Image: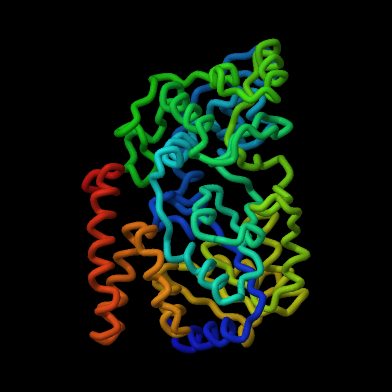
Length: 402
């Protein structure tokens, strides 16, 4: 890592009082959750599997040929309401692994997730605007008024198109029933991929052909306020049940994790520093908060990403100032460990060891052995070794010896 960039980043954080963190899918990749836009991500992989998706025959517009053409044009069309209303199966086929994984508590935190809570402990966090839908942020950020998921959460359930909520936690009996329905009714289109790239059938075999999941399948768990929606499904032959993620042609969430109204574009005007973590800034919505911060407000931007993509995006939009901003280029966990060490916050990770994923634990162990003196390393040694041993056994259940 560039020592000058590290020094500048630590100085900015020490001086800051109101920090906004803007995070993306790169925050969770160390946990084993594939990102979206990288070559091995969800979109790139799914675009090569068009023959595996289930297409529903219908008369006229919206038939199987139209559905396939839509996915061939852009695989993300499966994640739009205009497609979902004709055929909800490709959405569920793309999301099968994540839905089941959340229900089975498959993933743990990365060091990137923990940084937001450490900033909160320091009294510096104003808002974590997380574009991630995996909900891992909710396991660590203690002040829910400082957590915002504009793209929704896979661990919630709604009835489209009005987004009527059914449950707000993967531990809810309704969600657990939904997970069992997904296992039984949705095929694994990633069956020949490694478990860390979406495969789920090695643990939870699915059918050879997918079938829709209806509200009626929830049985006695269906909330009374959804009875009308169930009747509409029965009469129209449509299916509305899905996780509470925001489809591409729908409106972003407008409330924080506490349920209070939240406007990230307004809140950034109260901030004095913005961290950009694990996002390429290639989206068309919440990513613009970073551009507003840099171009209009002149706030220092600290970018954590292994690639230059977010910095390139900021430069194209006139939002980057080399003398003001800094890019900590490298693996996310490694960069954050450098920051925590330089800011003298590294020992706070001891509180989170049981919640960290194996990759993050090993990154921390490597850092401690290489960078700390024997006395300081000794504080971590025993607890780290125990946490790693436990996590090796836990992850073996999901990934075997991969």
